[in-house]
Length: 437
Image (cartoon, rainbow, N blue to C red):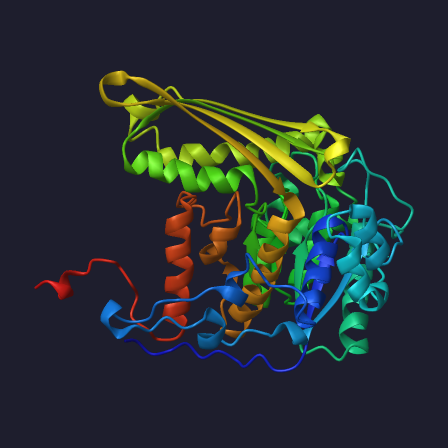
């Protein structure tokens, strides 16, 4: 047993700032409101339903995670956010079509009270969307100051104790690091110069980090994972996490691929295709936005299977990812995977998976967990990249000198061991020799 980390208590209200009040955000908010009323269950949420083993197996200690670390309760959450459309959260949720109207109507008054602030938006970065509810300013620095003003007003008017921000906006066009991203000073000069290498998501991230508000990126955009904002986060002691929520097809890849590798079964090919009809699907119909998503989805297998270590098994893997916009499905995403396997003596086998899922239903508990764990990290004095939250992301942000961990089971062990460390509990290695020596 080690000394527990000093964690400030979760007193008062926690403001959850969501950038984009579309399908994912309204599903999170309506879900939390329904769970508060006792008319739904927080299925899929580790913070609400998960347990954690403490000590040896013989001790039979497996409390709920929420009972061992001080997390904000759902009753203490207050939601706010920005969107390019003026619809309140009830109207936006009806448009999204994820949650049944009969359930939405039970939380309608609370949803109608949540109206978005005008968003920072530039169609150059999300070409398939446009909306009238946007901020205007002389430059991107001015827009960032307007976001900060929104945040401060929200905190004061609701008498909030703390805040977290999660980018739940659309996938922006593919970008790579540039000179503007090198240092905080370069970044701030680029804001004032309206540099095109700073998309809308970076304006929000800068505003949050400057205010010391934990920031998580739920999309695959290049955002807070640039040296300039990592530097600023170190200065303001701000936790960062991301990126791209691990929901449908990639979730299955991070479950199945580790199992195939554990048994040293070869993989010649992995073909993945999706049909999706919500706003996310419409945005991804643009090749430049799809490139950002494709990079996020395709890197998973390379890091899990490690072809450089197992060239005979994975050295010639053909990995194809497709996303097709198909409006009739709405938020009902369907993913097909064909996996061409190689077994003993080179004999071919196949695995075929058809996953019919609800994109926002899978994403909502992740957004909730990330918000609560990021607030915990802040109260525990943890700043910078929170790699222990990689469990939730397709492209986990990580230290530059190491590769990202994509194996879902290793990620969960990392997350739970971090919680054990915070509480001064023994880390679990699963060696188990003490039961037999």
